[in-house]
Image 1 (cartoon, helix red, strand yellow):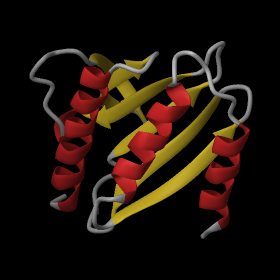
Image 2 (spheres, one colour):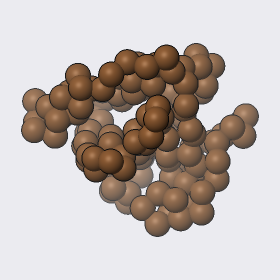
Image 3 (cartoon, one colour):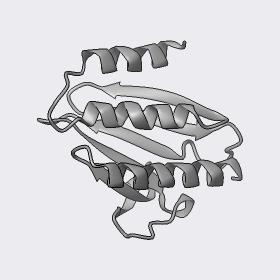
Image 4 (cartoon, helix red, strand yellow):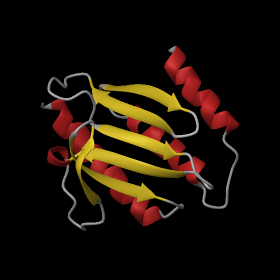
Amino acid sequence: MSDGLQEVETFIENWPDSAEKNKQIFIRLKRFLESRPGVILEFIPRPGLTYSLRATHENQKNKPLFVMLDVIEDTPRWLSVCFYGELITDPDETGDYVPEGLLGEDAICFDLEEFDEIAIKYVEARLAEAHENASLS
């Protein structure tokens, strides 16, 4: 395990459980990404601000990532999952369009503030879509 991924495991171990179960959402989405072929994960901690898990596809050439899963340091912590706007669809229009919101490019972000199975499955479908599209770009 690389130092960065060991760092994410340490972060998870030190994250106390909460009624919102946001730690469990983070673990579930991390495992979802790990299960996809060709995914490269990078963990970028910024204590006091965010803890960012970024995923890239090994075939990706034009973008430095296809999703950024941020743990927002708040009470309680919550998750913001952001994609480049052109890599996903949002058929239910539940995401927030954020101009220049992902490394200076237009993004669609989904905020997960508590465990909601329907919302998590919707984000997982976007993860699968972004993963597929990133593998072609």
